Length: 461
Ligand code: ADP
Ligand code: MG
Image 1 (tube, rainbow, N blue to C red):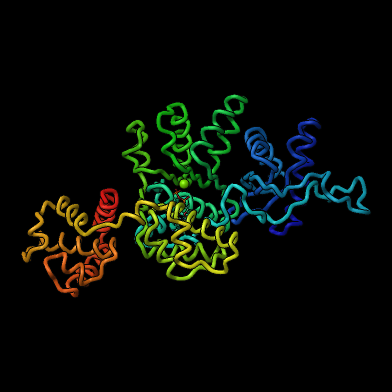
Image 2 (image 1 turned 45 degrees about the horizontal axis):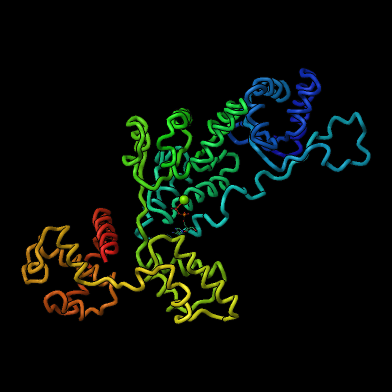
């Protein structure tokens, strides 16, 4: 029964039965714009309809009737799944076949292309796993997202992604959507921001179509909601959200949420907060220099902006952690080149073009003194010890952290940094740098600690 012809025939017979049972207007309204999509290996008969509303309506009112008719035709129990498939064309749009008689029941009522061969318009085509640059700051969140995409509902449910603006949360949510859509074409993937979720709810209330709201969300196999923090202080919608959440969770469907802060900092009732934390929360940290550089390089290539390597290094160095801003700077460089007919971006020009995008950092370099002060404050060591000769672990570790940060956040050479730390040799600084780098890649706490310090230092300088 897997060939298209077969399911088309089955479906036209099912429709014949249903047509007999219904009055003509109802039949025309709800069944004319439907088409069989496939019978899955799990024995699900998938029916395509043109829009969400039709899907909700059919599911609500006609699914039993359809199941019964399907059993009558095929002789077996098949489950029914109704999906929105914009390729379903109406009978009017279908070319009339010459020679097909008026009583020829084998002519299918509708024609259908392969399922899902049109891209989804609600997703950015660039937000895929392939185009997501992986670095220390985001690999945890990225790997968790990929695991969910590979086994929706089975892994980390819910997955809660959080991090500051422009760090890639939306990109990862949509990467999951792309992946599932491509690899499990008949799983229903719903991606919305929490504002869209709220609007949908309010509109469905207004139009008295709360059922279609429920159908849209509660029949999802994968529900992705972005910027969940905007549900704060909207109690009515929170309740709707949690009903949906519970229903999906109960049925083992995948839920992925993104927010600009961790679950515990979202201002909602405790019982709601605890749901968020039930699965896995994964944070995305600001990218380090290497990752910023890799993202920029990929971005410049994808936008066909020819740049010299030193330009990329420069922008990656002065950029804020917000990747959206960094990409904005590159877009401006590209526009400037186009307008001034320059074949390639060179450093003096780029400095000039981006200087007002990242003003603080390009004009106010970070000093070793600031770094030392913040490290001393965090670890509770005094300055003379930090730059002195004591070798106890309580001093050595903060000292190495401060050296690492001096290397990461200033333009100073190794010997110059050595001088700032009580006249140490440049190999000592090098060793400290390597040591902290290694610890950061092995221990998440170290990584987070360094990131936090970096942020504080940047704010203080
Ligand atoms: P958020 O939702 O966290 O505010 P976005 O997901 O919208 O951030 O990301 C902002 C921009 O940065 C997008 O254009 C996105 O493609 C890009 N971006 C973020 N992280 C990465 C990454 N790791 N690799 C490539 N591009 C990235
Ligand atoms: Mg976002």
